[in-house]
Length: 93
Image (cartoon, rainbow, N blue to C red; front, side, top):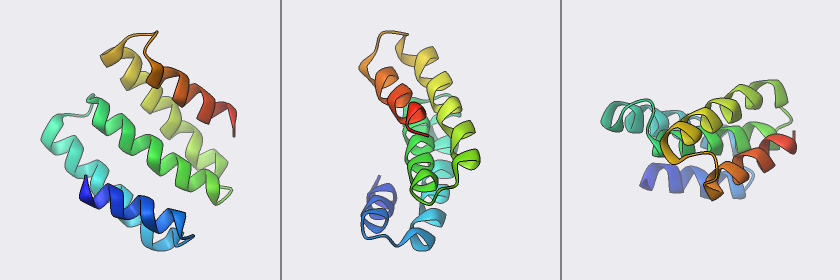
């Protein structure tokens, strides 16, 4: 979580090249600790996709959003508010 928060801070500062490896590392740690279908992994994917979208890397962001959506639907159900968040982010591409 701390690594992800630092990556978020760097993204907000526009320091994308510093933030990206932290997002990747955060996602890998969460995946190993919690499993690849955990909502925290979905959050990491969504955050990385947001960074890529901010850089105009839409074709890289889209599959991450879609995987995040898939994980969240499976774990949280179709009507969870997090589903709307990811759909909104995906629509913004």
